[in-house]
Length: 212
Image 1 (spheres, rainbow, N blue to C red):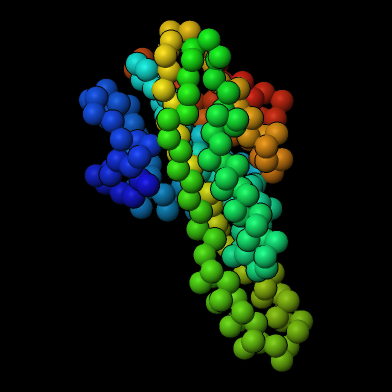
Image 2: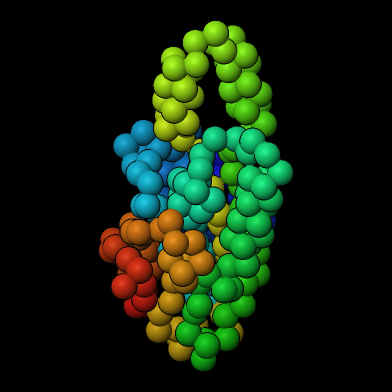
């Protein structure tokens, strides 16, 4: 998990090369509490998500941040077994990074590590139940408050990946399959970092190929 400055390297982002540290620094900064709060407040739009991609000599790092609504269809804490199962299945689906990000086969890239987190906590759900019990004398107002609370909740999924490539010189691009795996995705704002510089682009269901 990236949890602030200085950036603490986890399983996915652990690397010793100085080049990797330099390339991943913008991702580290963007994931600090201050930057994360700004991004969530300004960019939490259903249907949209952010994808950071960093290429090094033999590795590819990816970081995905998305509103939970894009992935499971809701953002409140799971209220029943069906919703809990939906969240669990989404986590497992996201961990299968090799099916969501298809790198050029000739490059011989394999998924070395993947981490998935989400903040759809049970505590939030318990708070909703307490609020409902307190206001059950006025069903009309209760419905309005529940609707407001549900739309006001901003839960997210955060996934990180590390791919290792045997023939990085043959890597031509990445076919991003998030749109077919999770129909809630409508647009991906991509920040791509390489030793040569940084590129920003946009992917959609009709344009999901990330070219090198």
